[in-house]
Image (cartoon, rainbow, N blue to C red):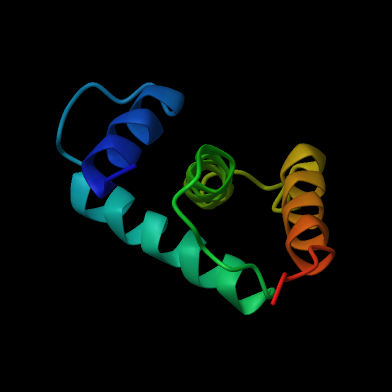
Length: 93
């Protein structure tokens, strides 16, 4: 999925209809990607990885305005499951 598609889905998730926050949301998508890489996740171009990146960016956007800054449980489970599935694969040589 290209970056514009990710931005469009993120805006729908956040119920944003204007382009006023686009630069900030693009930055959050990059931050989400870097955070996933820091946890050891290899970013690939599949739907699961893209949606987790979008959810991560949405979490970063929402947590700035909320007193509760804990990561949503579903997001932590998704990150863990993606990481474990990637680490558990056997490479055929």
